[in-house]
Image (cartoon, rainbow, N blue to C red; front, top):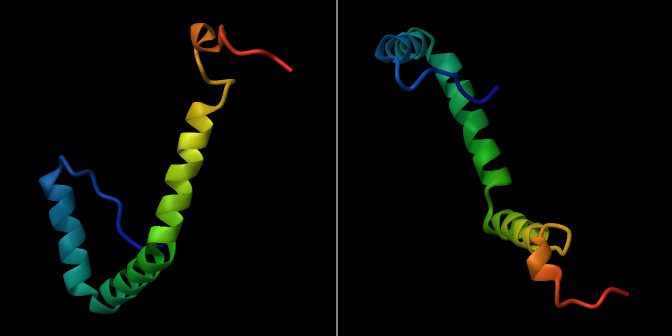
Length: 76
């Protein structure tokens, strides 16, 4: 676990989560460390580029194009 899940529209819930972390600084440190580790390993530029490139390839695949966009293409 690398964070606390709270409803962003519920100030009371956010406050309770903050109080929890203030009362348990070791838990806060552990969550912070886990979040940092996840962020630095999962959100590198190389991984972002790979994900965006994969999404572009998926969206541009002939199977996803509308029928009219495929009309002029020869099938093999």
